[in-house]
Image (tube, rainbow, N blue to C red; front, top):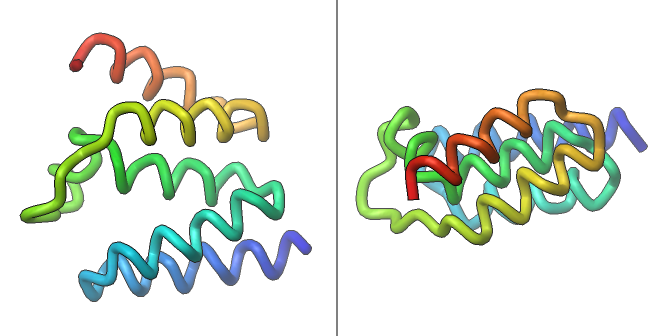
Length: 93
């Protein structure tokens, strides 16, 4: 299951690099639903204004609540870095 979820994240990264945000989100969500913290972190980043800017994404509106929801899920799945991102969301919005 973990190997499959990691493949989903890799495919999501490829889609994101090609500008396929909707496809990337679906792949990241499937990885997160399989229990992969990395999938939840990647999905949250696609909604996080700071991460979207870092990725150079243009024309995509951030969604703080979706970012918060997926960072919280990532934290539940064991992603230590999710805590810092959640704190930053609280400070930036």
